[in-house]
Amino acid sequence: MKIEICLESIESVIAAEKGGADRVEFCADLFEGGTTPSLGAFKVARANSSITMSVMIRPRGGDFCYSDLEFAAMKEDITLFKEAGADCVVFGILTPDGEIDSKRNKELVELARPMEVTFHRAFDMTPNAERSLETLIGLGVDRVLTSGLEATVIEGLEVLVALVKQAGDRIIVMPGCGITERNFAFLDSKVKAKEYHVFVPGTTESKMTYRPDHIYMGGMLRQAEFAISHTDQNRVSTVTTIGASL
Image (cartoon, rainbow, N blue to C red; front, side, top):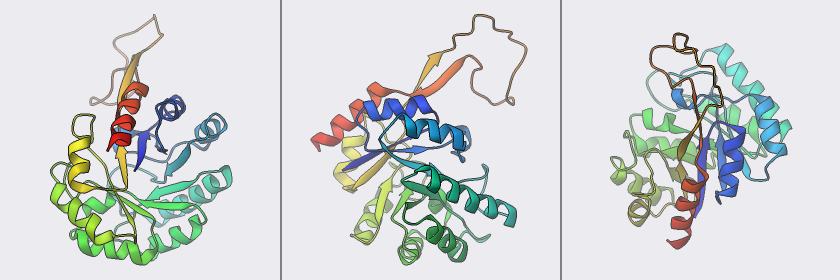
């Protein structure tokens, strides 16, 4: 079993490695579900960690139907992160009717090699899990991150079980979204996946002593200005320990 930690900072990469994770998915803006991180942040993380690193290739939040300019940016980012030493890239493009865009995804898969390719939870926005999985297998994708076409893995449990069985050794089905220390063992007992995708956040109080309370850097729906989000190393250790015992 492998455990991948979803995160968005250099410090979190280091915490995940110290906590025993097998791989990280490096993103920016997890508030939007994850977007492409800066190349500079990746390079610093790569220089300070030996953990296997997947990089999110997603030019914006929102849907997964991209313009020609957004698609061009995705190709450019894949090339840059491959040159910078990424082990895997994570992306997903859909057509307006919710199907997997075979043409564009195939182009990205071919561009990404020899890196591994993960198709992210755009999969969960498709209308038919079985059909979508076969499409990804045909495209040569290495793994798919999914919550079973539901909001969380617990709600999508039956679909996840079916997908793992359907996949066999042809593609890795990696459950993610809603996995916690409390439900991990139960989930694995039902799904028996080879890999799991886990988000285990914590917060650190800002070092700022001067704190104007009338200025905000984000919109009305936002994180606290003086709380720093990061991966909780102790929670990673708990999850990896559970995984090792299963």
